[in-house]
Structure formats: C-alpha cells, structure tokens
Length: 199
Image (cartoon, rainbow, N blue to C red):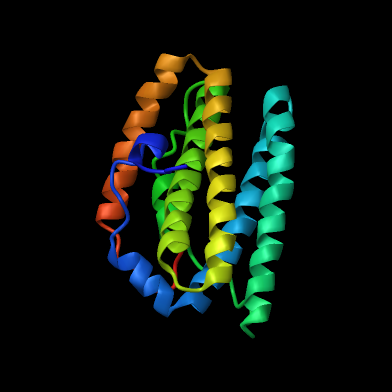
C-alpha cells in the first residue's frame, strides 16, 4: 500500500535529508523510536482513563495499548542486537508543538476530538517516516521491521480518525482535521532536521 499524501492527508512531506541523517544515526533513531512507542502506549492509556464512559474508545484503544507496548519491546530488541543502550527519554519538540494547538475549552466531546486528531497526526507522520526507513535504509532486517510498523501505524491513524467521527459530527471533524493538517505542516516546515529524532 502507498502511504502517501493521498492516504495520510499530510500536507508536507518529510525533508528528504531526514532519511540520510537517520541512516547515519540509526542508533539514536532507534532510541528515540523506542520512547515514541512508550509515549504512544501511554497516550492511549490516558485517553481511556480520561474518557472511560466512551465504550467505543475503550474497546478500540485497549488493543492499541498492547500493540504500541509490543512495538516498544521490539525496538528494545533491535537496540540489544546492536549493543546499544536505551538511554534517557528525549524531549519531543514535534509532539509538544502539536499539543500547544489542542483546544482546552468547549464541550467534553470537542476536547476529545482534538486529542484524537492530534494522536492521528502523530501516527500519520510516524507512518510516513517508517515508510522512508523501509524504502531507503540498507539494513534488510530494519527494512522488514519498519514495513511492519508502517502498516500498523496506518491502522492506528485510522482508529483515531474513526473515533473522532464517532463522537463529533463528520463536518466538524473534517474542518478541524484540515486545520490541524495545516498547523502540522507549518510545524514541520519550521523545525530543524535532527539526527537523533524520529519526528
């Protein structure tokens, strides 16, 4: 499957230099990736804790928690194979910038919509980065690994969008989604390409 702009909706492709930088710093990328998976699992847990009355959300995100945690474990395995220690958690400027655009007021459902759409954006960008790693890094084992994770992240992206449409009218979700896509593109456009970050 081609996880391109048409599938994910992302308005700005990653800087083509990123995959070259990533290839030369794969240890740092794997460390950051491990923490990204841990944060993804924690984010889903937080949504379940904050919105336990949302049955569809609890049902859909519970297996995602397990899957994200299994990804964390699988990245740790890749680190161990390469003799690389996990190292401390890194500050994720990309996610922090996105989170600054989350609306805090309004109804509970609108707040939930923003949280779900921001999670969808993070999954979409991760999916796009995994696609680049799958296609362009020479390590065959990591190619296969990132292909599998690309497919998985695309599924999570769809989960979050589906849940947003479960709790808010589709036109409202679409308008906010397009707004956040523009914001995400601006964030990426103005961010430094880092050698030790997945995003």
